[in-house]
Length: 426
Image 1 (cartoon, rainbow, N blue to C red):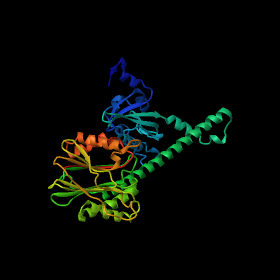
Image 2 (cartoon, helix red, strand yellow):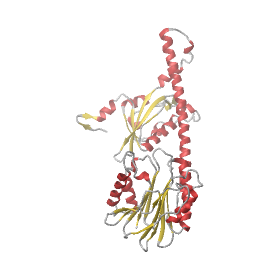
Image 3 (cartoon, one colour):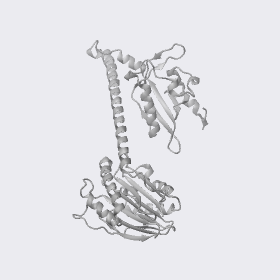
Image 4 (cartoon, helix red, strand yellow):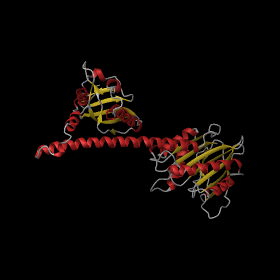
């Protein structure tokens, strides 16, 4: 590895850095190591480069159950976090015993302070990991060699120095406890996340006729959530030439909103199969929502699509209007049958319904407010941005349109609100 730019030999610079550094690829194979790293590990470059980290430094087989010696496992977990998040990971002081170099045999007790930093490619993926370590073995051994110094075996500077070492050792012990506590919290969160995802999958449709109807869906929970939300979508076949599609949005986020969403989606899915049109389906859903805690002010929109007559029949309960893009790029909002959200009136009442025609080759999208609403920005700005993006990508297939809409509206960089999107090529 040698690269000279602007008169600087970066390979020599890397080798001269006094901090021990090694570079690993995504498979945790050594790509490079500087002189400081070789010195503290007692290895040569030839013994490391091209070898897997845990082949070069295997765990001590004689201490498999020692909780203080789980440095290899903790280090591997840190590397996985770096690969998953693309962010640096700083570890608490670790005990990681390594084989003695040469023919001595056996393992040497060692303590390390590691920081693992990703090197990202142009697409944001992790290409390499820089492993920076400081050898704290001498410090730990020296500190633990004076466990009773604070009781006073001397006075003056000697007592303060020895007492300081005990305090540092105590700090190390507390840091270990904090690290282990954080690991337990991380594992608990991972289990909770898995349960939440399973719940979400169970509540969303799994057999939508997407391919038959030339459609695509996208689902984006709010950033920082458990990847569950109160937005939903559904699509069912009514006959050979007719199918229905719906999108809804429960107030709130997280598991509580997702639970309400699951019940409302199931109720509307049943109503879509038996109701005489979207307005009647939403009327039935409104009746059900009044008996469900957390359903107040939920919005929903439903459309019946007839591919034989090229008509769209729709009704909306306070939801943002679907958007229809004609083959010539002209877009229109289907907003002629919009009523109040579910359970918003003191008494249930019948819902409005409208019908419009479309030209084959048009594109229809249904969406929730997380796609277009932004803080300190009018909703009209977001709708205009969506309209322009849809018109620009209208000639693509539904999957490509969906991906481009999310990119143009900044959804791939995270959002503060949940979002659902359905794209249908008519």
